[in-house]
Amino acid sequence: MAKQLGFFIDQNYCTGCKTCQIACKDKNDLPIGVVWRHVAEWVGGSTNRFNGAVETSAFAYYTSIACNHCEDPICIKVCPTTAIHKGNDGIVSIDDGLCVGCRLCEWACPYGAPQFDAARGVETKCNFCADYLAEGREPACVAACPSRAIEFGELSELRAKYGTINDVAPLPDSSITRPSLVIAPSRNAQPNGSPNGSVVNPKELV
Amino acid sequence: MDTKETPLVIFTILAQMSVGAFVVNGILHLFARRKNAKAGIDKLSDPALYAIGPVMVVALLISLAHLGDPLHALNTMNNFGRSWLSREIVFGVAFAALAIAFSVVHKREWLTPLLHELLAGVTALFGLAFILSQAMIYVIPTIPAWDSWATPVSFFVTTFLLGSLAVGVDFVAVTTLPGMRSRHGGDTRPLLYQSLRWISASALILLGVQFVIEPTYALELSSKGGAAAQSANLLLFGGGSAFVAEMILFFAGGALIALFLHLIRGGTPDAVVETTAGSGGAGAAGAGLSQRVMVYAVSTAFVCVLASEVLGRMLFYTSNVRIGF
Image (cartoon, rainbow over all chains, first blue to last red; front, side, top):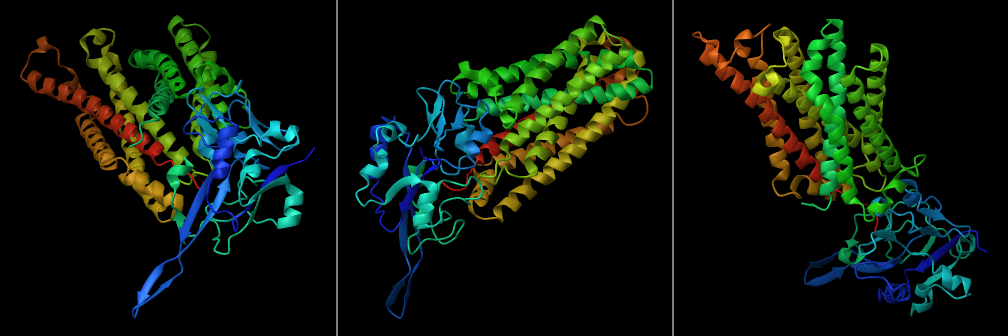
């Protein structure tokens, strides 16, 4: 069994198609308004005109994010009920039987991972498709990606293979929660907190 | 403006007022004890004291409306070692229970004076621990607008501001409302006016602090860019004119308290107090007017400050902008 599972996202291959998001929603039968995996579109640069010529530095790239099953999960720290816990394989999951639906984890998580199921009155989140893993299958998002931009595996192996970058805009400072996430940055990728660009699809990330 | 968190707005404001009133009452009792005026101050403060526990219970019940699954409410105390929210609930429930216990002990005159004061002190400490925990819930590194000194400072300022004004309204009501005045002896007047002067002066200082903190903090946020600047924008403009209304109400409350302080200036303002219809004499009409003005000033000041605190708390929740996704 893995010690700490993690995701790898290759921004150079992600086209922003959101198949991962839909595959996750389908597999987990998520209600309207709940998306465990979501895709941010970061757009920056500028287009200038001078002497009749047009020069542009405009760029865009996508980042697909679900729960990063952090090494230091802020959701676990703030949760008053101990409903959120980290398993032996590093997967962070929520116990419905304990969750009181106070939504504090949802406020605190800088990846928007915990999401509220209004009908059941509890928080829900990505569980790494633990049932699929037990059957030896890939998580739904990984299997569905048409450009094979998402991988998963033991975090130490992902880092050995792809490096340790995970501080790319619009992601938060990784020192806050130490996410189990490795990013292959787009050639236009901006450091987190960069003023060059903004998330242009904020309503899709709610 | 964001109204989703209305249960939390009501809960935090009522709870802070309860704790503040308990602590302010305690401080006034400590002063009164030095002047051997315990019986007098008890008459003045008893109605407020008996209201604190029930108001806190109501506040806690309202907070349940914020939960997705209130049936799991008891689970919120599970994570005392790590979660400020667990600590808030544990200390809050303990404060409510102790405040009610203290009311009963006080009413029945149980326990020795020393144990009596010890119980009051422990209750006040639980109340203050509750306010600190309540503030620390919001000091989250991923929400820059809340992750600041301003959160605990403004929660404590609100606590003592609303607490002292609530006690002030109680004191004035006890001494002027017909039904309540019969229980109040004339010998408590110097004590009453001294207490009211202290209450008014502290309230004015706290109002000043809040009046400076709020805009300064919004400016500090706006200079940081990113999520912090978005929060500043929501604080200042997210509620339409709510921020301006909050400031105006603050100012109005302060002006009324200043007027009240002016009315009760001097040593023993008997002229202000003697007002009963049959008291006769040339000064009666004028004195009656002063007393009415005094009651209106204090209660209107309380309403203004309460309204501005409610607006401020609504804006506080509206300014919730997280970094990252």
